[in-house]
Length: 262
Image 1: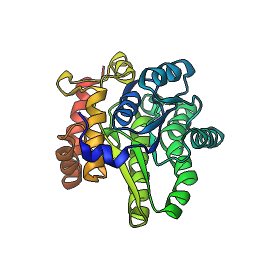
Image 2 (image 1 turned 90 degrees about the horizontal axis):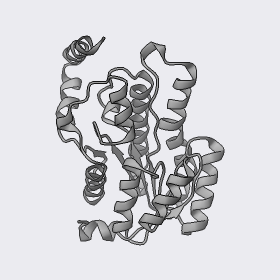
Image 3 (image 1 turned 45 degrees about the vertical axis):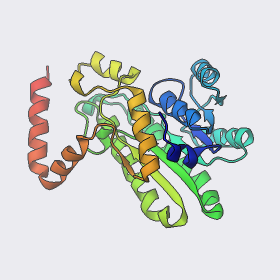
Image 4 (image 1 turned 60 degrees about the vertical axis):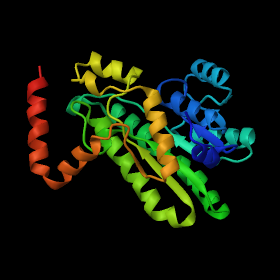
């Protein structure tokens, strides 16, 4: 259930959520709708986009949320539909590539979607938000961006970059009224998790949470004004251990890698 504080924070605001045809993005869009926001759902899959928008009572704007032209078109369409964009949630993301066998195309796609989609949206939105004195940017990254992910180098490295960009946005614009949140879950029951399982990535079922869990944690972070959003609270301890003892952390992760390498 949404708290009255969260409802007041986002009620009637114009919200854009990318990659929201399914998964985490759809759950976040639903949470904003429940809180009284006016929501544009974006997804590269036009059918999933339309279905989610109809089911949630949102506005469908399908299309590319990563390329320069695609982001510009999305923001133009969302501005037309909403009047103003108050909240932008950069949720669209891709996985792909295994270690050093990852292709140039896989590396480029990971950075284009997982990082540059965020950068391009911020470039178009933040100057206007600064002029009017407020705006909210949400980056859906991953615990892989704070820690790492065994196997997928493009995913882990690009998610690190997404976290770094969100941090840069926050420390640069916070005093000008721009609120930034970066969401860093571990395993969530999504199509991406199914893909990881299919590739043989070790997944501990005890730490798999639902997309609704992620959305509700985000809404709580909005209420509290928290930058770092951890749907798996234990990630804070892992992050602290990594920072305080990098060599030990690498050793532990390498041991896990050795155990699960075929």
